[in-house]
Image (cartoon, rainbow, N blue to C red; front, top):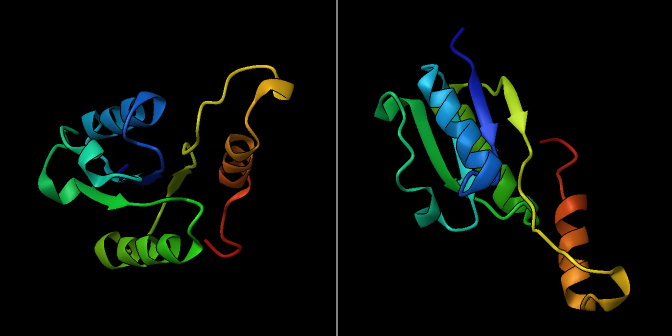
Length: 114
């Protein structure tokens, strides 16, 4: 099956490994990261199998733009993997308020009709 994957947070870790596995299967993927340069080096089976996109999931307008680009390029999304996020480690009472807010905004981000 030639599925179209939409993978957020594909610059490192699980998101990047998943993207590589998708490409190894010959499927297509939209891969996103806050910094487009971080997506370089992903190895799709061909240039028509990948759509790299800059996306900060906290920005609903940007998310809508990326979804529209996906519709134009691939016509559909079959599998959505919302992997974007930040690692925040430490006892809650010792974490910085700004870091906590940023983390919660990413976790709670999303578009009602994405």
